[in-house]
Length: 360
Image 1: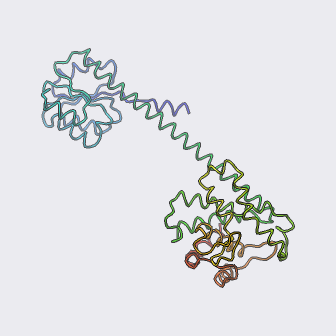
Image 2 (image 1 turned 60 degrees about the vertical axis):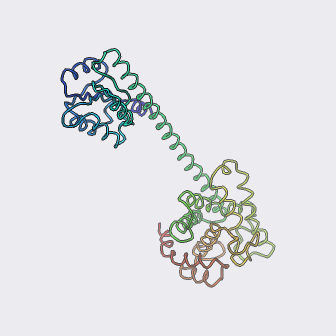
Image 3 (image 1 turned 60 degrees about the horizontal axis):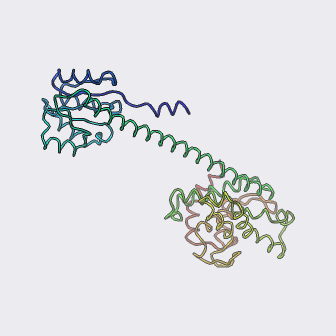
């Protein structure tokens, strides 16, 4: 950490003097060499080349106006075009301090126009004040950038920790249900794949996709409230037992609402909706609210289909795993509920790639 802060405090200490008169360069070097490393250029063309080669090493440029090959105003125009006058303070130090030169110089971004012959203590104070101001601004920018980087890193760790806790909770419920815990990972992956690679994800940004996929992990969290005798029953549930099993949807929504940290997450809204509505059906015969058609949010529709596909292709306490081909037949034939035709079409096209998720 300290090394990073030291690097952030390191500022350029090289001053470039651009003047075709060796005497003028010597005078300026004598004034500033006690405070800065000095580089020199004999005309504007050489000066521009030195600036552009590595501008970050420069703390200031002292620029004459009247020079052969390329004058100071021409140099300024090039620096202004590249935006370097915002990064490196440039001073015109010239005997040609007419109104037109001063006006254009300031328009092009010079920090000051200082007339020749220079008065050493005046030019020193005027230049140093600006260099120190630029240095302070750069230090502040570096500190802010460092702090932002540290904050982003902490936020990333918090997100990873929160996701890990969510996955652990969901996996614990799966273990209680006699599953391996891989179910929730696959639901996460299938949901993310559908949103990223099919028309069902239209209108969702990358953050939305990540939040929905994370929320999908918590779709069955309400099963924690279902008695073991019902949750792990190897045979068919009675009508009364099935009514109790159906309550895991509303129980899941309630449970999620009791976790203050989760309420601050952008995934919270999706998690609550998916927990409550992932057993709704396109024909309105699902539960708990009997939503029909597009009344069911698309994210809950996707999780519902992913859940059915994974349940069919996985071994459970009450059945053996079906082959992917047989699972697709059952889904298309309506043996496992009624789904959005557009969603079904997208899923069928994506299924060969989704099947590869089971090979990981």
